[in-house]
Image (tube, rainbow, N blue to C red; front, top):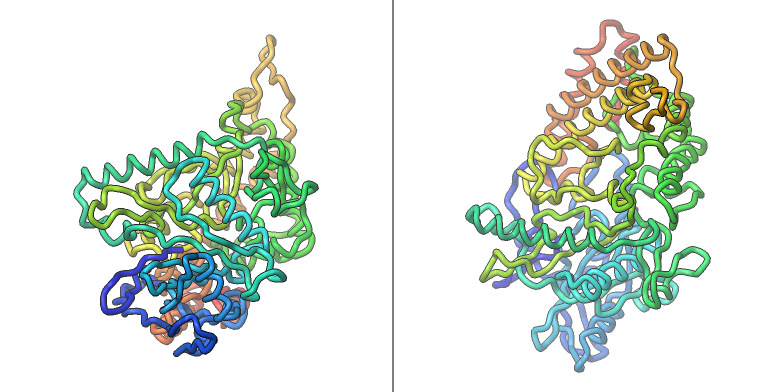
Length: 535
């Protein structure tokens, strides 16, 4: 999460608005101050203000959303841990709760001698306990020490609550040097932006050159058992993935193998097994994630049987469409969130990158699956190079208005493209010409391997009909979201000050939608029943 701040009479938020409406940012006050290292330390704040998430409200499931972002800890112990990490008899004089991200709380701790540290505490929704913190720390050290990348130094950490003085997991890091690139990006000249882009290219190239023998997440050897990891050297090992795609949308509640995987085939197989396990446990799986359709009267109605059938078809063909280039199958670490708030630059010389932050949930996957253009240099219109469901950035609400708009437009375009290409591929793979291009042909002009997929003309026609219904439902939802003024995949999150206004907009959008789509009272009741945006 962005850890930027501005010096002056007080600290000021530099995080972007958490809602799509543009609004001014007010200064953050220093939530807690301490006097000296004496045992009589007093704090001028309510500890609940530190534990509770207050950056957003939700129009539905608010209690659950807030619970997923609530974490308590011992404030005095936090001060002691930070002082010990700073060393040299450091004495804390001020603690500031930095602007909140979706997955962590962060506190800027200022010492009497002016030194500043950041204490980061993960929320419950950040990922699997212990593993998320342990992997983040190991990944940061690997990037900093082994790859020589500009990453804040980790001073100390605790990934197990049972051993934590705070009563919570934590990471203490040096404050990121410089300022957020987002504060100066728009004012930079083209040649200065080019200089930054070149540095980003060097950083991503460095990441891509570091190859791993397996997929999963990186850990220190002492943080994972031998039975659940593959040792790289005496310091690092690859263990279970902390990638959020393996825990979002109730996936974390399913007992499945989460790595490490020693081959691309085993990893790709695990993707399907994961989805099949979720469908078995949750018949309505994916309904919560709102992937773009209403599932209303006469519309696209996905079923467990249909989803399982597609996954079974995938398992029949995936091994034939994997890259043949070993380099593309190699496991790499890839920072998947290089936007202008995670890149810091020198304040006096903003063309010089000083730090890259936010390494949480960064995993090791085959290169062809995760290597992509950083959002910083993404442009309108690129087509996905693989048939993987596009995702909005985890911190979509933290991007600048321009970045957020571009991300939403690109996400929607890529979603359409992937769905279209996957449908086309399933249809074309069943034809000899397309299949020959994938597996090659023998001396008689026949495919080297018989195509495992066979579709009747009626099945192909049904696929086309299903796609048309899905496409119409996507258009329906996109229109509603546009009327409300929110983004694809919206979970009901709004800035507290916008809550009443968005409630009003959503109510009006719902009435217009029901009037537009319903011809009979029965249809209206049917559409109202599947309305996905709360009440």
